[in-house]
Image 1: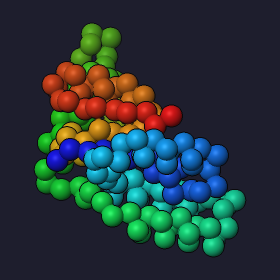
Image 2: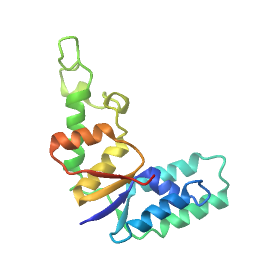
Image 3: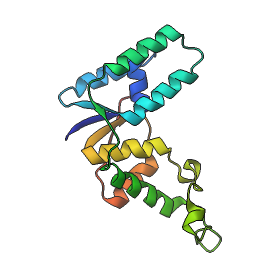
Image 4: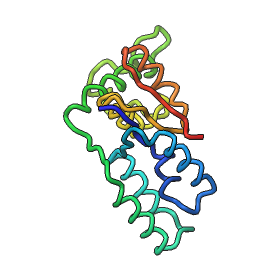
Length: 169
């Protein structure tokens, strides 16, 4: 599959017609209209969460955003085939950036100690970005984002994945 995958920062601007950069993302998507543009179910979850905690947005406008989301035709679910690139990214990040003692050894010695102990802050990557990047790798899609995703790109190179990013700004 070839095409594009919208990151949360692109999709949220696309569906928020009041956003000052709404026309910019639409213009970008017009330029790449020759290939399909997908949205991750993870992105939809992040945007729905944002709508629920956005006190400045009235209910009618939230419903309008939800309506635009519901009409988006190409949605990617996380599948069993997403597991490999996700776990590769996470393991490579953990190997490189997890906490270590003064001798360079992992602070935790048992797998149970490692479970959920290394935060996104320590790895320098938000968990949902790993899932979205894994889907882009899984389906060979260009990830449309405004984030640099430096560490994910670094791990992509180490893993010999062909993660491509495109900035919509």
